[in-house]
Length: 151
Image (cartoon, rainbow, N blue to C red; front, top):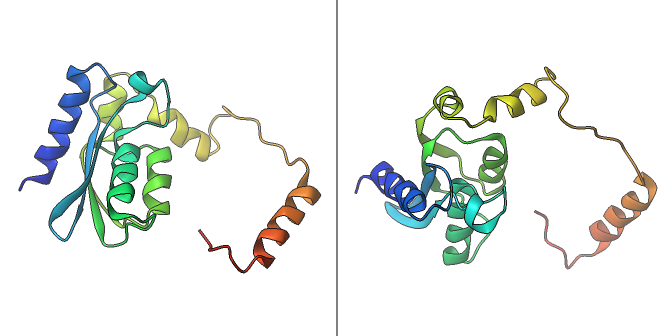
């Protein structure tokens, strides 16, 4: 099976339904597709519903786990910073992508602005520490609860 072709089909499905941009993904484990997703930002009015994130959610639900170790992700475009975070949190260590960040920029998406922010080249976000003592107590309480599993 051509997994990139399946990711492209996902993207076309989303475009046809006017659910979001040309971004589709599939997650593969042991040679089988275990998760699918396409951009549903417009449908859900939710900026986190990128194809990769939708595929991660689908794979986790189907596999009954938050840990996608041993899986590969096929996606129509190089993942944005948010999706990279989701991929790393899911323990996916292999990603295959079709179009680059530069290609994505050419059709009107702004991934480059996020990379510039992370590199300190612009200031799109104000961050300030606030309520640290109370939050440290929260973390301490969590760490002391032996029933909690780390993740």
